[in-house]
Image (cartoon, rainbow, N blue to C red; front, side, top):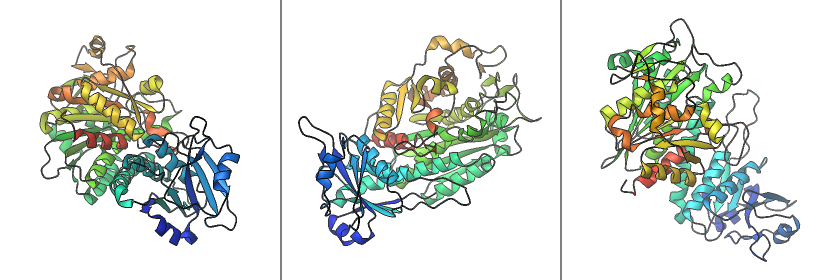
Length: 496
């Protein structure tokens, strides 16, 4: 589903196109000491309307994302939106961009006057807010098309913000891919279909692709992926994407869980909530979206993406509780619960990554546990890593991106919960508690030589929202694309 077109324009161009403008968005600063909320200076000349007076009479507080509407009957434009700019930081400006789009109504074009003194990082965030808030996904036959097609950012120095807008666009398009994949109904997105979508998108930006089918997975020893996919008539895949720019000196491997639908398998889930299990490939969608954005921005770092894709279904051929699975590289898992399938497929991918790809950094994203949501709620992902620098850089990138993480512990005294009488590990410790923690500890066992440079993000709840909020639209959020791209950009400038 296409996003709105966001472009930079000068006030001269804007004045020349007044007849086509549906609404003008002006930023409002909050009260400062004895000074009441007021319009922020911009390069855009004010229209013939009592705008400044309206700020005071409307009770506008200047809070980030706060909107007051000033109709201008017969005016050009006919509608002015006064949107709070808060502290004018990136987070506040992201909300401003989102609020402008959400309140555009049936207008086909709007113009946002950028506050004087804006920095590129703030403009990038504002553009991201506008782009992401414009996202729609629907398969309804009578759905009304989105009216808004164009958002103009008014500034007297568009060249200064061109790179920021390019970055926002690339990240929004990567997030759009991730959202589309998650929102797609499970009946449509068989593993082969998901892999095909990734391959097509990758080809457009110069990313190479290899897709392993069930026969190749068996030949190469990816028995965890095969086990989880064994109950479905639609076989599993392992999709490997590579962005390898000339001269890259660092290699990052991103791994994403790609369970296209999760019934729980033989350990079947309750019916309530199973409809949302189409989101169980949110991590896979995010890492693909991130490499697409990185390639579009031509980031000078080699990136390999691994997405194990499978349907976890119950049938006469499904793997069972009590089975022993031999993963890539030889380690074995006793299956205590077939609904703990995400870690089983990720184990194969992580083992392959550390043994064959030799990454400088290994990061995985997964809608892995309900325990993550119990601990941290709908908007904060759980971050695990033994590397303080890596954890701090990911947390900083998430904060800059408008996504949040909270670092969780990896306590050694929880490791015995993974013991099995018959295999190297148990995939689902019974009664151990700390479900997100024990899942992360399980994954760490497969990172081998990459362990000290590995991070795991459990983003099960943040992958989906039940109501639109700021730049998030109802449904899939595409969580992680923004964080990963910001992190990749910062990683290139550090000695980590």
